[in-house]
Length: 384
Image 1 (tube, rainbow, N blue to C red):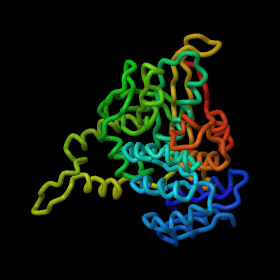
Image 2 (spheres, rainbow, N blue to C red; image 1 turned 180 degrees about the vertical axis):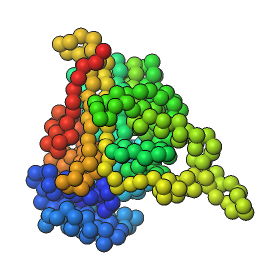
Image 3 (cartoon, rainbow, N blue to C red; image 1 turned 120 degrees about the vertical axis):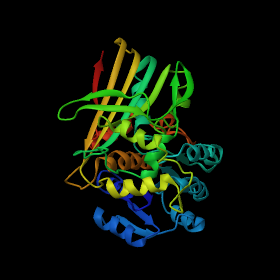
Image 4 (cartoon, rainbow, N blue to C red; image 1 turned 45 degrees about the vertical axis):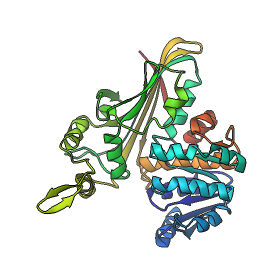
């Protein structure tokens, strides 16, 4: 199996590491980036002769197609706005394609390639990171256990192990993406109907085992991805909330209320500036990054469980920075699942070809088993 990883950032490194050290049957991993030095650095960090660097500008269609043709599948770890053209390049190359997603409009455009992807005999599977991503397959895995399912509630958060004021948060992915999650509307199922709710609302408390204790969760956009369409008509309630340390939502909501997340330029001292651009710069300057992190994942299902009657089933995952590999919890829970998807496509394990959401085409049981092999394990419980 030969896999192409596009992008030599944090997630590209995580995917390359997983392919080289956690996976079987991998003959070649090509890490490609517009910056050849970054690609070489990833290959050297992974430390496996099968991982080779390459230089490519993802906007160079001919070069991308040529590079893809030498691989069974390609995984995009570059900024989401390149993903549609990369998916089209994969169809031309006849190579399976998945990405980390992050934008509903781009994902919808990729899924619209379904007929072309089926004709090419390949899979295009967007939104394969953490959330959206891994949690979508976990939702399908839990849902399959119920005779009748009423509710799916998903809670996810990436946090510093040692929180610092004022936001008790560290940068674990793009600040632009973070602001998008906080200001765009969240798509949910309520009362069996598809609807939208405002982000930074409906704050609730969650309890985790010590030493973590109480956290908060609130509505944010993007995490449900294609799940509302997948489960519409099958459940009464489905939603996604982001987990943070208590008080974070109120503090960030103040910034949004003051207009600091607006992209509309304002005049200040004779200078025109978009408040959002300034906010991004200040967050990047003042929030920590690259410190030991945590990822919390909680899914709750309610319905009639086979053999138990009316039941609430909970899946919990708590992942931590790995000092042995130097990989963050966010790298492990974002890049590792995407690597698994790339391998499943290459091995022909999807239920059908085409451009299709992962919860509708991946074998959920096998996916969960692959996570467990990487020490990303579900703690299962039944709750009142």
